[in-house]
Image (cartoon, rainbow, N blue to C red):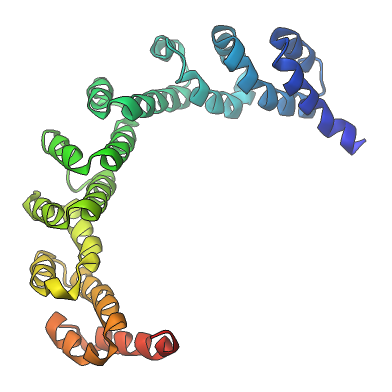
Length: 273
């Protein structure tokens, strides 16, 4: 019986790729548990074969199917006329999901255009998350270009989403042009995003560029954060040169507590050195 219950949705999925509307009609006659499972299986083939009808069908489902509708927003965002559906959505959650997915799809093709498009929703609660997703894709493609675009955007550098944007751009840029990435970070307006990114990325600076590391650490304003970043950097340096540990402690100005943490780390990992 368990096999029978589980094979019905699979059969519906195969059926949907050949005769979607009949498969949907049949699914609607199933007991509730099987119906939900069948809907999840057929929604992909339905959107692939008849996206307009699929969109109308899924949006007409009751609120008890909102989880399915949210998943459908990924598929609907690929629809050529996806933007026309935004105003039809009465559920704030579905609207948010669709707008985010449309902006993400646009960002894959043209991040700059995606950023302009999402600007019309700058007063919506999902705006910041959408901007973050756009810049994530932009940084992957061209971090220098993303950094320039961020400079033209009116953004709160103390906002949580700015942390992720700045750190991601900086991290991607460090892979291709560390000096440019560091210069950019230092030039940013003071704010938590800058502080978070510097504290994270300074650990990627090698000891052969100690002056650069010292300069970055001096930009960190909070002493606790500065000590934590210095310890993380010290671990990296001392792991490669364990005999220089005490000099590294002096150079980075580690507190007694952080110095002991470094010593403990090297002692506990000595077998790997």
